[in-house]
Image (cartoon, rainbow, N blue to C red; front, top):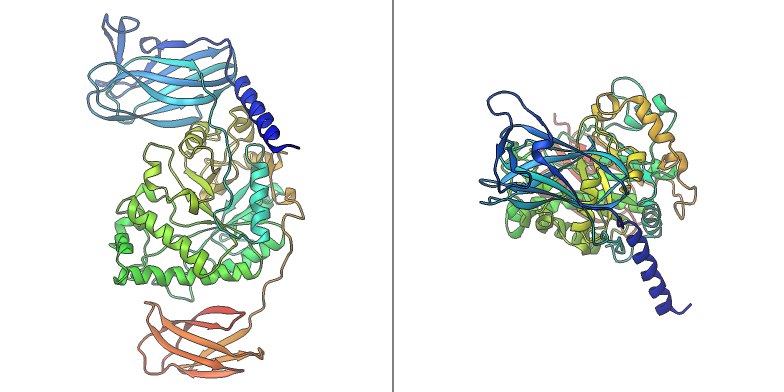
Length: 561
């Protein structure tokens, strides 16, 4: 086919599809604030105020109360919703649609009633709807709410290629699978901090728990490198089997997602929360600083783990530096520039230094006007995720979906990268807001009824438009590799490290302490070796053994007499 003709036909088709989504005969609906249901008790309840200059001759001083508007739409389609507001000082309040979908709306200080966008180009079904204004800051003068038929189609999705220049075949296949299902079906997932081998008792992992309760397993296994760097005893981890679990899950045709709660790189604390460490991410701009070197050391350690997954052909939905704009993690504590730089250096290091080609990079965003200030860039991000925790709310989260679509100009797949309550596929399809996948957090968020009942889990995992593990195609991956057996067996005793190997090739070793200081380097080694580590005061070390084909890192403990 002539490609110019094809492109023209495609363009006309997209235009017609968008046109059909614009309500052709609907009229603007104006809802007067004084006719809304007002709620809030006490001295600061909302008040209706007469003003002949207002739309209905009145407005509502919201004070510390809430307003609920009701309307009936005769036609489904995309609409714009605006609030006519006067605000003494900058204010933010929450708007909720149909009891499910919420968005925080900023109204700048103004001396006259002004139209403030609440939602732009959102899809609303035919029938009855409620829109609530829920006090966050409160204290605005509210004249009316208008629902206007959209005169422009929503931003079309035109998803970018993978950011990794030469992705592995399995990574490319997984990304294509995500693309094929995005906006049509949602892929189920769950986070766990426990080994897949822990299938019973109080420490039962979330995959096993869901299978026990519903007879189904989600498609995506969410894991965390939380305990793989930092000032931690190497013989204690929430899950010491992260790498083995990831390989096993992929070999069972599952999808692997990894995040990284990055503990204080300085090792002065064992924390990642801003209020518990003084680690300064702005040192990323100072390569001579101890903090910069500590960050590079930690990235090197994590890269080595990811190389193990690469060797086993495991593609990874890779989500570091999450929730940065919230400021509660150290990597977001000093504003966006430092965080973006850390991300960009990590992407360059992992891609160009370590040649990792098995990563699909997931950036966690907020759906607000400051989102792009934090964004590392299209050239190093593949998927935009949003973390949403609203207890018991199984709505589609369409307001966030549409806002992210607009903010990122339709270039990226959108996903719920963390959540408390999982979204309902019926609501997502109704609202034209079908995310790529959902990932409820571990523990109570997955297992307690206030977040997700067992019936809701069962219905979700059984729905034909929710992809569970058994729904994944057997040919999702090009090949299934078994885990590479340990090429080296390590034993530590009496301040000596005994290395046993059957490899016929030469290898080299590096021994670092947990601050990253190199204590010993030996090369041109062959066969079994005994290495003395006497004369140091450290107890824990990182032992790296490598040659041209293999790299393994072991955390070891030296028992002193």
